[in-house]
Length: 447
Image (cartoon, rainbow, N blue to C red):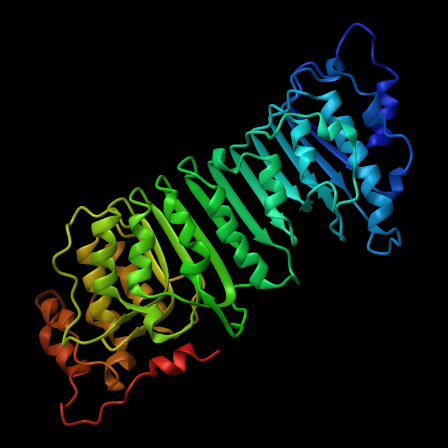
């Protein structure tokens, strides 16, 4: 048996059968421990009766402190009991390498120093509010006698107004390699964003992956201006070994210029995945796709996935991506906002020919009829090697016949295989026809 999920009451019955000279679960690696009001949380826990020889090889412990939504017990009545359970777990399993703490419907505060009870811990998932032990109203003498801090390599924190300064006093944040912080729903975004700068001050070159998530749906309407991203993420530029940066903030409106973006990238030369997912606060946050791709790849040549707040194609008669090495490893390119004055057919052709490894463009969920949706559909045909015939383009007749886009150069280039006469018959429109302008950038930025 490598994993076991069992309630404390059932375990109490099994424990009566435990021989004195043999472990009950000799090869158990992972244990999920569940306590809830139905299990009489306030009574003496059978967890306190565990000995190291019950599961001598246990490496992963998940503690679930469930609570019914109708419970009237306050936080103050639950905290001491839960703290006691965690201390019991630390005494029973001193060699744990992975610890998960899951709370119920009402998150509670725990002293960050509780993590120092687990000296061998390498990974932690914390669904609770981390405080210093004084503000959490805990003065356990045992906590004061522990080593200064613990070294955790992977930390997942469901941020619920946690005190990251207190966490830094218990955990060596400079040793973390993978860090993910998700905001609990219903909490202010400003303190959450400020936590980014705290992380940056303590993180070091050990950090290779960081994920920050506001916890909001992707279609959340943006709130008023939240400031400049560089003010929050700037300290992370010192983490030079970062290979994955994912800052997902739906519902947030942040400023980011091309200069600031390149400044961030210069701190992350080994970057492979870049996701900056939020609403651009101004047109400066919608980058010319040709310029930004070219400049970013000069700094971060290993990038395989790029998602930016906004991309656009402007300022030239025909869209092309020249001057880029054909060996670029890009697999995915997308943005929250995509504004184009070029024909989606031309963009799909250019992306397909410029990035030989590219497999997808546009966000995973993009509205039907949007520029990204149209480019993505055409690009898919090209990538999978479908025979792009005149019939395929007839289905996109509205892209050209509407007058929004100029005649696609890529159609001319492909005309030898598709039949020039058929294409011209379906797509040619007089240059004297009035052109219908596309959406203005200011309209796209409006919440």
